[in-house]
Each structure stands twice: as C-alpha cells, then as structure tokens.
Image 1 (cartoon, rainbow, N blue to C red):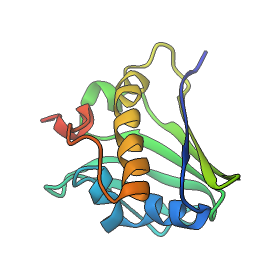
Image 2 (spheres, rainbow, N blue to C red):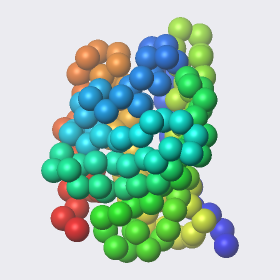
Image 3 (spheres, helix red, strand yellow):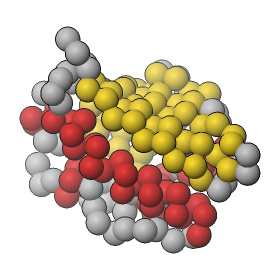
Image 4 (cartoon, rainbow, N blue to C red):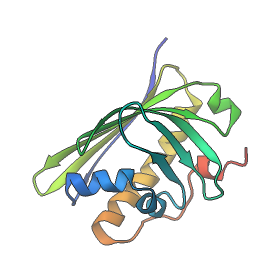
Length: 155
C-alpha cells in the first residue's frame, strides 16, 4: 500500500526549548489551536489525546518517540468523524532544529493509505495552526481565528 503524506516546514524566531514548550503545554496550545489542546505525559509510550473546547476527544494515540527539544513522534488516529477514523492510525512527526537565529520546525504527517481523506483534512489544518504558532511565538498574537475542519466537525 502506498502512503499519503503532508510536510510543512517553517522557521520561527524562537529557541528549540520554547518551541518544545509551545508544542507540549496544553494552556499555551489552546491559544494557537483556538481552544483545542493535547494531553499527554509527552514520554515515549505514553497516551496522547486531542481535546476540543467542549471536552470531546477528537484524536487519540500514543507518543512513539519523545526527544525534547528535538523530536516528537505521535501515533495518531482521528476519533470524531467516522470516515476519518476508519482510515486507522497515522504518524505525525515534529522535528526541531536550531537554524542561525531561529528554529526550524518540520511537521510530517503520514498514513499508510492513498488517497487519504485524513491527510487531506490535516493538509488544510496544519498551515493555519502552524501559522498561528509561529506568529504567537514571535509577536504574541495569532494570525487566524478560522477553526480547522476537525475542530468544526459536529460528528
């Protein structure tokens, strides 16, 4: 089976440690995910879940790899919309690298399915979320208040 993949690379004027904090702290996360946040112990083997503003678990999985502040890999399955849940588990990898006076963030989200409605959905969501993350770390403000398709889904 072939895989579907979405890759997003951005450079953020911050440190790797501050970026790691932003990616793993639920309260900070709520700012750039527009109320949504993730909960985990952020250690290899620990459970991971994404929680909406209303407390509904939208995605769940497990931390496959955690190497602060360099690399985070999550086994990730959508739990809300049945057609996305049926596609099974995906893998989302965050790679963090120092780059001159900034930090390079590469997000790679892939699934062993082609085509993939899930990867199509995250391909629309990640640019919004990561633009908000970059702007929040650099300016203290988010760019867009448009919610991702996942966060808007009614089930």
